Image (cartoon, rainbow, N blue to C red):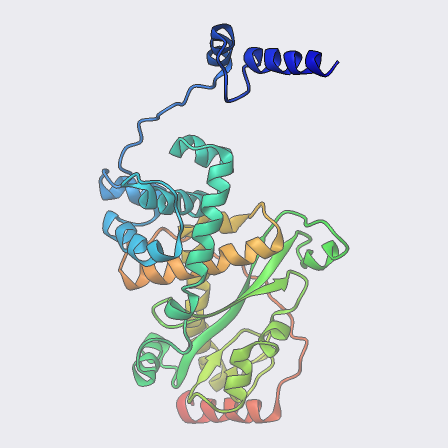
Length: 354
């Protein structure tokens, strides 16, 4: 019986086409018949196109994409010796950020399968997010007096170091017990992202971790920038809308302005409009932020990555897209005005707008 089993195993080894040590010619024929042929696609250099072509698809010029490759190269692991692999990985992520298309559409455009596209976007996104501390810093990379002067040139509002507001990034309905937390006042699922910008629409602070049901002022009070400003670490004020409570470091408009207060409100609105312009530029440059079909954690990562790319584009003077009109959410305040904040606001009216 033992001898018969040995003969049977020997015959099976010779006939089976899926074993490595095959000596039967018929088995070799079967193995070749079932072998999946490797397909070598002709992939062109993604940067071998004019800048107009690249701006439409990636929102960056060829020099800008090369700059991103030099920044992200040490942080991205790729297992191919193809000379343009890193450039294509960056371009895949940029195409997704710029278009917000389905992964199948991005894969068809880049001649890659969906799984490769998903892994590439994730790795590039995390690499860009890791640069947030380099390109996003409050109050900014310039001197404080220069930033105040640039804000003052807009409408004559003094001592401003930033404009703060929140914007909603629509996401797909998340699964789990906390799904209702992401439904905002407009009845769709979103994350509420706080940003602070300077007069050049460069983002100096971003907080992307809160669900859409959380109020703007609550996000601000829980942020690190609130702690820094309340402790007097920076000399200057932020400008916010009526949804925030007036503070000594955060000035808001008057609800029912009188004569001199109307001039204050007018200058306040024109100066604070910079943050609305920043939201418009950010979402016009990266259409994926109109709706992200990912879970909330990845939506926050993508939002921070887009903010970093926006600052890189602004600092490198990349071509700016056309900005559609912004949506006014008219957020009612949930925290009362601080007495010292109202006193400082009255002093601004008396000293600068009377």
